[in-house]
Image (cartoon, rainbow, N blue to C red):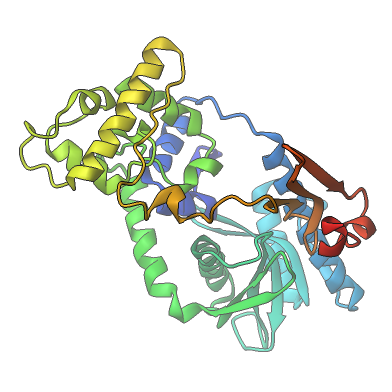
Length: 371
């Protein structure tokens, strides 16, 4: 979300953020009025970003190596209207591949990795284009399809024809193609809801924890909000539905949960054992917050002897515990450390097998570990 020449512009990332957490959109809009502090980007985020750029450029190289002519938008012009005009000009000229295409439709702004020509008539002539996007992930995600739908909607406006398909180039170089018509109605519904939100809706949002928190530039602001509100979401392993049930019974904060008996609250629709587990966890966290120390409560063993550690086999002198560490972001994966924890006499020792090259990573076999 950005303001360009006094006009607000929305991107595919804004729509995806809204889909995953509506409070993100609230904070994005607040940021336009008064700049908010961003969460710091850690080294792993930077690595993933670099790997994503490298993956995109590798696909570009494969296209060029195949002999296809590629028009790279924005090499000469950097402002958005010029890049959008350059994209449309390349489409009208019938370029085989357009890299880093810029598409604008009113207040919507899209940056598609690739537009690839197909021989399907449109307002451009005997040809039209379909969107191809590169993603480092090795499996497709719903948000990827939303992004593709966003770009495809802008592309349809530019060429006067809805693309038939849209495509993902995944991190393992596999290609997934999707029929746009299968997703367009859902996307239209999502955009309608997004328009209501950014159009001045006064509906309040709250930063409920979700999967998007790990990627969000506002994550630290939400953490501060939870702490200030003593919110129930801070209780380890509590679910969204459990929070709703607790609040419905009058338990609004973590401190209130720690002090609750579960009996005086009216309409509490949580299993007693589940409630006691949550309450006990809240007690530990409230004590830790007050004292600055960590507390551990050791639970009584299962009386029936059939759950928890009782399900493990009895210890044996020949027990071995195996671990392996790897990097999923390396092309094809890379395991760089195998380790075993074994008994030597009366002591336990850890023996590690480090790989300092890809050749070494493939040389460690189970037989070498056992020996």
